[in-house]
Image (tube, rainbow, N blue to C red; front, side, top):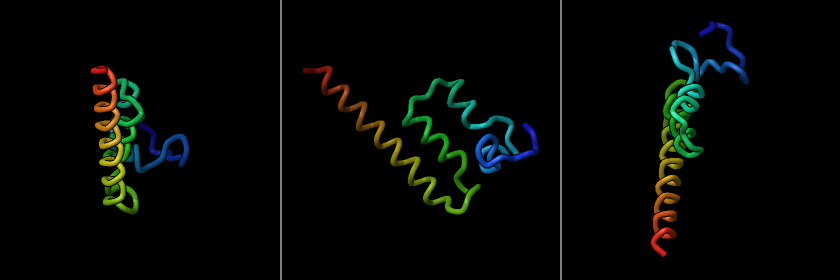
Length: 78
């Protein structure tokens, strides 16, 4: 990974000191929207201004995914 950071293409809070950029992990693992965003916020927690906010956002995306899964399961039962 390059030491040249770009706020759009290569933001330091995602790549500095890392072997793998979160977006590449998300793509490699085939994560959906909710899980991908949760991973993104977990990966940057403590690397930007507000770790608590990033953790809360990750939890919010995970909760939304759980709600979605439950709705799908209930719909499939009908």
